Image 1: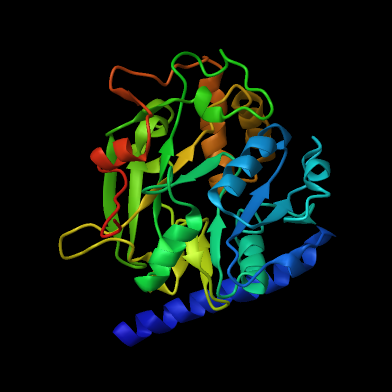
Image 2 (image 1 turned 120 degrees about the horizontal axis):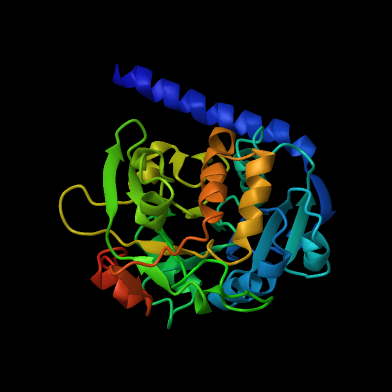
Length: 336
């Protein structure tokens, strides 16, 4: 039985790699600077559509963190996103008009780029509204973390997705280009999370937070999953299975201690809930290109018509990574 399960997982991983290889034909290179990627460079992969207003701060944040090269897949933006990215030496861009849904919500595109350009490199895979945070990130660059992970023989690093939101109605304050979105989305849920183990792939499954209580209050099991493994020392044989929630081989999903103690982990501060999200939710609800025929975005769009306030008396105002550690949302493990 065990051998059969292992065989099925190998087959599933190979299927993902074959699907990624097939999907490469739907990506058209717009700007290829990949020859400039150094052996020790940390690479970031991102798929986007119509995120022009977010890009200036996103690039600044990750450059300051220590990312050396960006691989962007532009899914047919019409707001100038692609044009804005063009001309930067540390950015490579691919354009596609293909279906995001048929590409397994971008997973096939990400797997292909990682396989071709990121073998034996630390690779960070995030969305434009996600900001990677880890222990000592205020004093140590990302390369310090990856060096320590290398020395500890750790190839994958987990980061819980923490939804950030404003105090007051989502559309009350306007976000402007180049602004730190955390100036507006300063609050988060310090509790209200459930966690269980997915024994098939050995990953954790986390749900909860403001989206569960505000948009899926009648069906919390349908709320988005918050467990992610965005930072990986990539190998061409690896493959994401579903977004960055889980990988194969499944040993990469064992990002937690099973015999007591704590393994190092970080967070992705998710700044979705800006005033720009109101129009974004409507667009994606109409396109139905996201998981389960866009059900998540349909729920957002319906509730956003009521101009909700996600803040509650149990909301916590974000300070820094040490606050997240005290709340048990991230851990520095043995890294000192």
